[in-house]
Image 1 (spheres, rainbow, N blue to C red):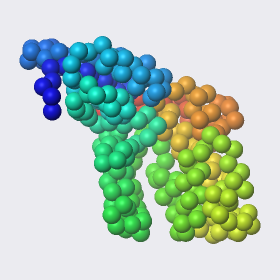
Image 2: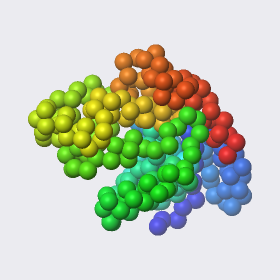
Image 3: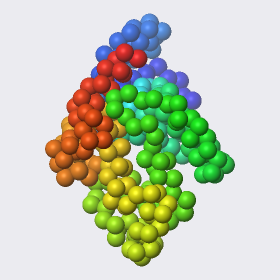
Image 4: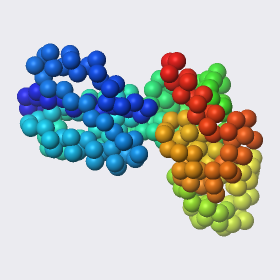
Length: 270
């Protein structure tokens, strides 16, 4: 590694560059040059561009340090030839609890580490074992802020690869309308075959399953991002924020803003 005297610090979500105010004096006292960048937190692409501009202003090689969501930002910005290394502090993306980027696996925090570990177990030992482990773990897990006790995909417990494929397709494309025909096409089944198999394996209709997946994704975005409520509604496939609000009240007993406030209160108290 080239000799490094510059360190660029990137803050996480629900923070700004002042998060590093106690770190920078220590770095500078060690005859290093520390700089903290301020992210707009409007989108990952915007934040990566901000860090790349900061890199361009620094002379010589540097280390990138990312805390929380900042870890994802430095992963994207770290391809610059001036970057000699990356340092992660609990990296996560606002709308994802963990990320797998080649040989780098990062999670959002302590409870998300469980999900990351389960992914590792499934990769090495298969879905049957990981389902058994997951069921034992999440039974005693309690999340605040109106969160459900289990993952919707885990609750549906689809057995066949085709139904699992359809569910994964739905999860990745929640912004789309996701008709039953579209899901059947993803599973490579006729509409009649798909509808019958889906209900047999999950115990619910495709439409109900999609609605539950939308709710789960929207809840995570409400709790873990700064996106406005109407943006969350659009990104998760609700027609408008009012329709999402009614769905939240039915499912969780609270509207989105109350759940967001509860999540932030718990984050601040942690």
